[in-house]
Amino acid sequence: MYELTICHLYPDLMNLYGDSGNIIALSKRCQWRGIDVKTVHVSLNDTFRYDDYDIIFMGGGQDYEQTIIQDDLVNGKRQHIIEAVEAGKVFLGICGGLQLLGKSYKTHSGQEIECVGALNLWTHGGETRQIGNLVFQCDFLMRGDDPGYVIGFENHSGKTYLGEGVKPMGKVIKGFGNNSEDGFEGAVYKNTYCSYSHGSLLPKNPALTDHLITLALLNKYPDFQGLEPLPDRLELLTRQSLIKRFVG
Image (tube, rainbow, N blue to C red; front, side, top):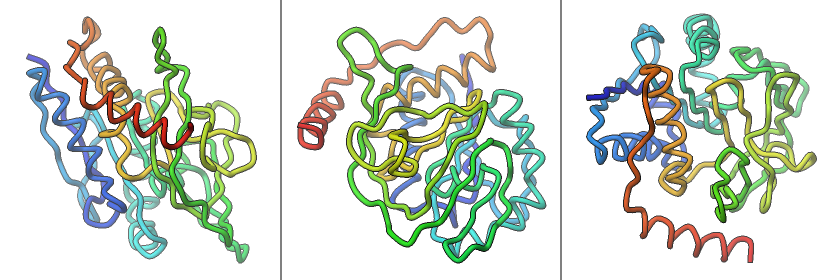
C-alpha cells in the first residue's frame, strides 16, 4: 500500500478563506484510492523535518498573521523549507504562502520585508486589492479536449513578479493573477506550486489535486505507475458550470 504524509504549516494562523479545504481534497482523493494518508500540523516553535513529509502546504493569512510567523519561518524553519523545495518535495503555497516562499515583500510604504527565499520571486504591496473569480490555463493539465483550466478566487493587494528559473503556473483567462500586468498566475519551481487562488483551490480542481498527489508518489516511489481514475462526474459538471459563468 502507498502511504503519504501531509504537513500543514501554521494551520492555526495561515488558513484564510477556507484554505484547509486543500488538505481535505488531497486526503480524500488519496483515501478513495486506498492510499494511506495522514496530516501533521506544524506551527510556531514546532520542529519541521521535511524528510518526514511528502506534501507540504502553507495557506494564506492577513498581514497580522504573517507578521506573527515571520521570525519563526525566516529564522527557524527557512533552511529546512529551502531544502524541502530543492529535494523535490511537493509544496503548495497559497497567497501569503506564495509571497513568503519568495525573496522579499515590499510594502506600499517602501519597507522591504525579508522572506524565506526558496523561490526566485518577489512581491510589491499595492493600495488596490485584486478581488474576484479567477480562471487560468495550465499547460501541464491539458489532456485531449480538456483545456487545463483551473478555477479559484483571488483577494490580494500584493503584486508578485517571477525571476529566472521560476515559471508561472498558468495563463490568466479571467481575473488579475500575479500582478494584473503580465497575464500570468502563480509560480512553479521543481515540485513547488504556488497560487493566489483561495476558496479553496483543490476541491474545485480535481485534476490539479491528482497532479500533486502523483508528483508526491513518484518522488517517494520511483516505480509508481499512476493513479486510478475516480468517478468525477459531479465535480466535472460543477467545473463546467463555473467556467461557463466566469468566462462565457
